[in-house]
Image (cartoon, rainbow, N blue to C red; front, side, top):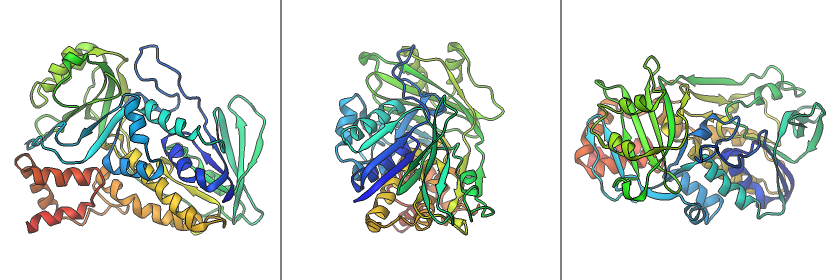
Length: 430
């Protein structure tokens, strides 16, 4: 058993990291900058200040659900108890590729869609049952505390959100999981012996912008699917998703190219759906009651911070989640990538026993683990190279998927991070 661990960030990545470490430390402190929401004036799932994506529906891929299982057995039952509805990625989903609708057949690939608030509630509620875990809201982390050589991190410098004072919090392990806005590169530069070892970044800009909105559907008006996904085509470069969340809430996302206009009112919202495949989305929205404003979101770039390439890295420090690999939200891979990173962290801490965790090795393994979701979100590896699968062959699979459940299920298994992209080559030998 180790002494004290500090997790910077009480979002999904930080809460998952806390679950990975809670039974391995005598004491664990989570430092969250904001305060968790208590409700919403629109009676829709509440959003959290400082987290724009909290206004949007969240989708947990099957690979992420498997990682959740490793971190906290029993979470599925608790999420369902609070209103979330599991669904099969094929049988319960109406999914349209440019080549046509995928067949609706049982795949065994189970997903969960809900508000971010509900997922965070489950993660926090389960942590609250551990008396050794303390979650402190309204905390600003100002920097790291290191030893004189800069070879080991000893803690963090913190302040209350509205306080100019400063407090030192000592710890045996610091986990940076504060998200896209992480200041870790600057913090590292301020440690003795770390200045000059730059953090390289790879950024792939999104070509899409989107709006999101919450709706309510009465039980009698619920369609025969729980997830509707319509991909853009050459003729209609717009796409949309509608998924059932907790209770009778449904989340809708409409996407278009950076130069296209997006709806700002009820009529324009409906008009945007005209011409998208058939009338399924429009029919559902005509029966639905809006429960939130229309939220506009800028394009979500994908960014990889290459901490694994640094020439120096202090012991007692790790980074994961969006602080390392932030993916375009359109692909729904962020929570899954964070959960897989948290599982890896737990394994590293188990191997380290009571010794100081050597974060450099963790960052290298995490970078390798993040390659899969990064390639799905960007179409290339971290060096900008295309994946090791023939693009023409891959396009042929997407063309064949509407007429083959086997092909559709194989593509979905890759999308849900249950199988690597290269596994699709097996279909050529059948």
